Length: 335
Image (tube, rainbow, N blue to C red):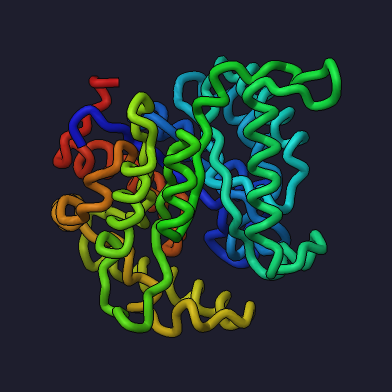
């Protein structure tokens, strides 16, 4: 990770069923401020609708504007805005305002994802997901780039350098090629569906072809930007880490069952298959063997699907910065 960046990612998921949204948001803000003090380079949030067990934040720009006023150095990112469910011009306006208010600290990530219920909520047929995303992506790219939106009128405030800080998330080689061709950054997920023909493939084995496709498609004069999100939970004690991870996985399994998406995982080992859990030495050794994360300029850690209490979450954030990332070559003094 020499010369690379360390990011914190939060889905703003409740640590217990009765936790109110206000406390979830306060906890996430505290985590971001904690990460900033520890030298993390970026903090990322996800966007989800009407499903707090999957993710508790429908309005990422509102939240990040508040975070920008409290944390004044760390860069702030969306991973991702579900662009197919949004008006792309409004997204461009909100992003430009946030980038202006934060002093140019926004990293703007897009994706086509989103749960079935989200697309039903916004009356977007699931089979049109990719077509709507591609159309909206083209519109927001043009708006951020300064194209006329109507005769004689362009985006205000102007996006400026924000147009060169966009990212695209994808599960596919074709999506990685599209990101590369456009000069955007590539965001890799913490987990991916397995091909039935290769159910035991590692996450790195699945994602290396995406990285290769992205780099091959990237214009030669554009610097690669690859962000690898990874589920990471670190504790001082290995057994304690395992207990909390199992508890979180069981809670996530219950969510999957209630949502009717048991094909994603049906056992605790399946939920935690792509997670790095243990002591700092355990996790550092495992991450060092992840060739896809190693090829990325940005390692972006998230605590989902473990989602422990705030005390354990803050300790994990600290151990990653002080014990794990330095083992991989990252140091806050380099920032």
